[in-house]
Image (cartoon, rainbow, N blue to C red):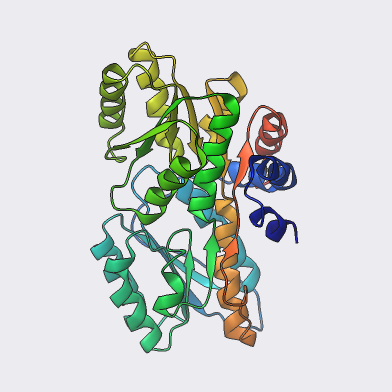
Length: 336
């Protein structure tokens, strides 16, 4: 398959081939952005004559992080198709997120999809769900931990490979000094992205830890770093809202650094169109949410398991000047 072919060759040229194949799906996920609130919400469906299992999707979403709007939208699409009552909840604090998983088990849900940004904190709750015979799949983060916990499947990208692809592209562009901005300290997937960047980049890399919830503090931290080190010529952010804060920082610091990012939203699409953001790495968050919920429905109805014990990879692919017009056109058309 194309996905298998891509991940057998992490060279930058293979990534560029993959982006052209995934462009249409990326566009649909960008258009899927909708305001996501906190707490717990339910998506109900009306298909007649079939059981309506309840599935919980529990993430580490932080306030204002538009990435999770796309994951949630994909999950809701699968729930509507499969006649599932979807319960969505989130908390950026891993201990509180673990409590949400325990609450879902106590509510006797039929299945749980969960993120593992901080696996060591989440492991007891996930394992208690499995002990209660509640099937668990992992989405977005935890690619090196899900199987040991006993989860059925994993849906997301290999963050080390994605970071390496970013580093290879920086090298191809002639960059010399890259700053990787980690907006959730301790988040294993974000750490892997920056480690991959260092692996794939021939130049100098350094990490900057910030609190991604406070965008003004992000901007000030990046400004301070740019003024401290004028040799920085690339900034890689690991989420779309952080990229926008970094752009403001570059301007205020009078820096010549260029900004690239992981993940997209409507503002990043516009920024790529006008050339203020170089490119974005997309992992198809809509697809992640969709597959997580749909896979649980398949397991509940027919004991199907996707991936054969290996992670199901949804990215990465590049969104840049070569495909942004197509992405923007589809987003404006509202196809997702």
